[in-house]
Length: 337
Image 1: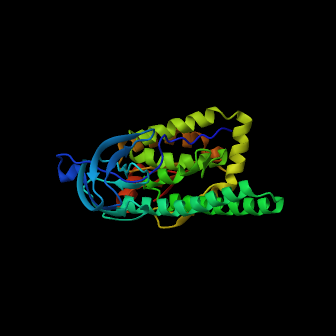
Image 2: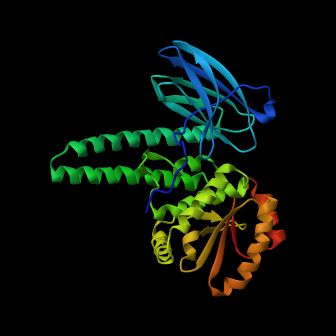
Image 3: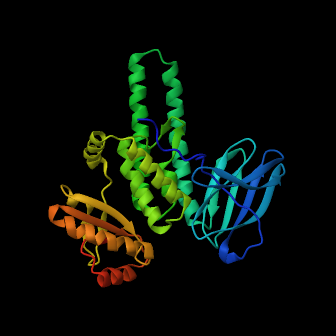
């Protein structure tokens, strides 16, 4: 099956732009950069399918300090700062953040960032993946040059080990940060244009998990819409028999969830094995989520006697508010937060 995860320009790294906007609807980025020559910094916003250049600033050889303010919407946004030579840093910014970024143009991966939770998560993904990519690239070069079948087998095994370790790291990251937009970066990382980390039909469930979580919070986001369209396109290319095979194979690789219900009892997703399970993400204070629950209630009542179950994960920051909504709505299915 052809590679289906395409995010346009997905070299995630840093960003910003100055404008006259209030602190409440802006983000401030303080950049301390040491440049090896006179150059330009390009500030871009990363949308789902493209990178949009917002501005550029001149930097001189040596130490430079720039303060940039960008108008920032409610949804966290990926920004990048890059130079003519290439190499970029990604920030994941939110409203009212005051971010400090320090880096050297000779080694943009060795940067520090403070004042932004999302950007710190992105840095973890970027630096971890960069180390893995360096190893994969070296192994690929050795494989091409090798004339020994035994050496090639050993290199292939090492390649697979490093690849699987990185994939496991990203999978765990997604499970542990289900409310972060950094998950979108985690699922679209790639070693090259032909080798994405999540690159098979078996990974469709993970894409659905990330898309569903983000769509529950920001249904109008171009990332939500883009991932939903991506999923529809993928599913359209799978025949009914292929889809059945995908479902059975995915049961092995589904990342298990273990989250407490309103009584504090831990409920494992794997405990529902053998049933037809809908894994759903929602926000209790979101009106669209409440409307979706009304529609879901009819389906649940119709098919619960036939083995249908709902495992609904709330993305609320306040458990008490969520519990009150669950109690008042009298939701009959498994609801966890």
